Length: 305
Image (cartoon, rainbow, N blue to C red; front, side):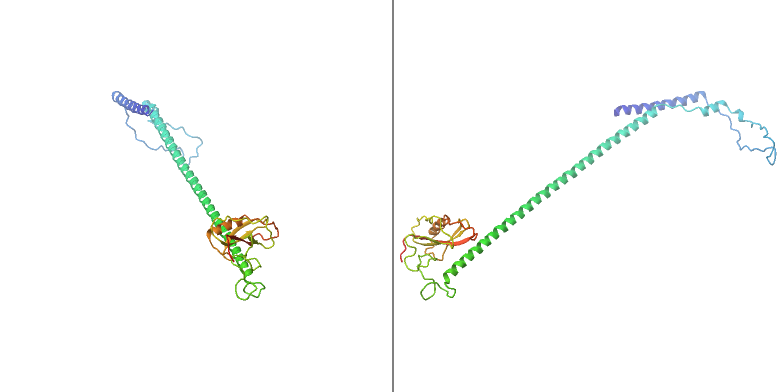
């Protein structure tokens, strides 16, 4: 298409040159005639009266010389120059080319704008995704921190309950009537009894726990069935006192050996006693504390008086 337009341009230029060359040759052979120009001036109406108020307009004679204008000159002046269609074709081709180039530029600009808009949209979506991920991470951190605080608060409450239970046990063993600092019927300090006995028992004579060897102390609650017996495979003898926590339904929710009342702090005996204490079952009492404290005492092996 571009080659055709170039050919048309060249054809237009060649045709125009040939046309003007033919005109020049024609003028040279035929010759050009001209008439000397007469002096020119401005026509003035002298009139026939100084005031110009005559009765009629006098007949004016046409100026001499105006009727002798050659017809060839007039014809030459009024004859329009010949035109050819070649320049119009060239102009049309140029306009077509300019329009196509303009359309091409507009298409490229449109593509550039679309690419820029697409890039902006992708950046916006990427930023939204980053913000969403950040919100998820922040929410996760807040949840982890809340869980950590909850566990810490639960542990603090457990420690407070354990401390209160130990304090209650200490008070029970240190005073009987609210005026003394020791427990027993004899004089002196300390708690009267046997090392292998039950710290909650009131009998201070004998070998400790009788023939059963095991006992419990839980105010206002009774045992369902019998105390579970620990597995005695430690080849050790002694007494292990286990502090238990019992809920309203009578289930043991926690069991931990304590030194007060225990005569042998052997790890094997402690483990066996705690495992057996967790299996104990007490009566249900909806009026009891949600976490009632008590003790279970286990006697391992043979212990002399």
